[in-house]
Amino acid sequence: MVLTWGCACRYGGLHGAAAVCLAYIVCMCGRYTLTRPEAVIDALFGDSVRDDSGLEPRYNIAPTQEVPVVRQNHGLELFSCRWGLVPAWAKPEKPLPTLINARCETVHEKPSFRDAFRARRCVVLADGFYEWERKGDQKLPWYFRRQGGLGFGMAAIWESWEKGDSLLESVSVLTTTANALVGRIHDRMPVMLTGEALEVWLGLWPRSLADLAAVMAPFPEVQMCAQRVGAAVNRATAEGEGLVVGLG
Image 1 (cartoon, one colour):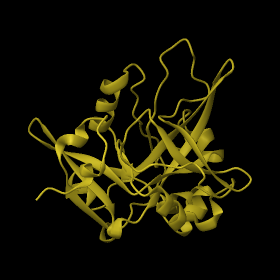
Image 2 (tube, rainbow, N blue to C red; image 1 turned 90 degrees about the vertical axis):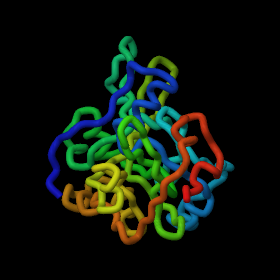
Image 3 (cartoon, rainbow, N blue to C red; image 1 turned 30 degrees about the horizontal axis):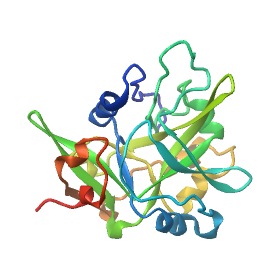
Image 4 (cartoon, helix red, strand yellow; image 1 turned 135 degrees about the horizontal axis):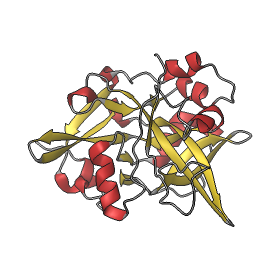
């Protein structure tokens, strides 16, 4: 993989449902699921990460929401932060940028991401994600996951932003070129990590760009499946297991 600079999604000037709606239209990844949090944590990390948080199943996780993340902090720890990275240097008197995605080809160069990429890599816990197929003026949701519903970590970076006594921790999910399955709907997909790739990504800096680039490749399409789901997921406030039930 050749690492060069690209773009990420900004919607700091928008709020609420309008911001979330724009996010899933123009960005990947813009919605995802964590339907079996304990099982995902156990499968990916075993006893290395203890879950005392009482995480609930979630079927429609959207930008600006709090999301469960695993990071290095003298060992692996589970923590919660807002989805939509705010750079540490963001000016409080201006609308805060909310960067939900960073392109893996360029994350090491952009001022908003490069420090976090060096020192604050993490994974967002997931077991599926959504993408929307455009047909005329329609946007038809598809649900992508690993075969067997297995969990994965989405490669991510986190940042801290302070204003007075307030501290905001936020996260951005990395995207890569879509594999053949996802590519039928969208040209990007989240960087999905399992096994040794998780260890490389979460390992302490320094890591060479070559090491990190190797784990940011598209996840094999033969290990994934996809299905059309109902339009209810188009609403950012929608929740429940019915959202991931396939049509037909």
